[in-house]
Amino acid sequence: MQNKIFLPLAIIIAGGLIAGALYFGGNGDRVSNDAEEPSFEKMSPVSEGDHIFGNPSAPIKLVEYSDTQCPYCRAFHQTMKMLMADFAPEGKVAWVYRHFAILGPESVTEAHATECAADQGGNEMFWKFIDAMFTAKNDNARFPVSASIETVAKGVGLDMEKFRTCQESRKFEEKILAERQNAANAGAQGTPYTLIVNAKNEPMAVIPGALPYESAKQVVEEALKNI
Figure 1 (cartoon, rainbow, N blue to C red):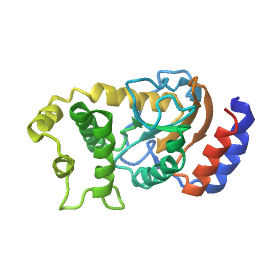
Figure 2 (cartoon, rainbow, N blue to C red):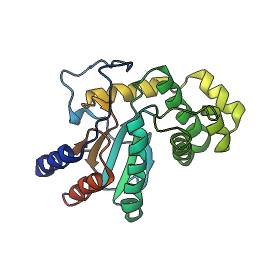
Figure 3 (tube, rainbow, N blue to C red):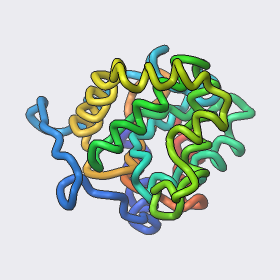
Figure 4 (cartoon, rainbow, N blue to C red):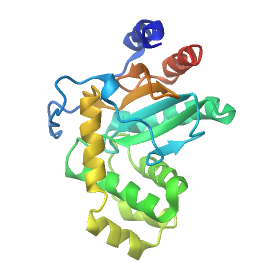
């Protein structure tokens, strides 16, 4: 199935790709490769432990590896929300969010905050929190003086004592680092990095960056033709 659409999608991507934040330079953290060669097929299968927006049994899943400190991820988050508005109501497409926290310690801290939110309020609170976080940030994906992780947590109604205790515990850090490693093993070279899989977790296509909405929609529509 992958061969049917991968080349056409590669052409679409090449024509509309906006580069994401690369982790091989600047202040990004390096990620080691346990695998001999990075490969799309080495992506961890979607499971109940993932943060899924939409129908968990959707025939198409967009598995996004993202960093909340990445400006391109902030922009692409809105694109993904638009795609879900288009396709999620029919139950055909779901969005899976995974951490690719590569831009320094704050990336890991913010990723951990989203997990602490989910720890309190489940999947619904995870999405509410990450939406609020991206909304609170400026175009550079940084908090202005008037905002912080704590103001986001208060704004979405979290129990602040439990939230602070969770953050201090770092109990989700292992999960975050594992997802970061899995992204690298699956071929990610920057953020955002989105893999399209079918219901059997078989690879269909890759979106290696912040593709504009119309181009991303075309990719999804092409994938749906091949399920």
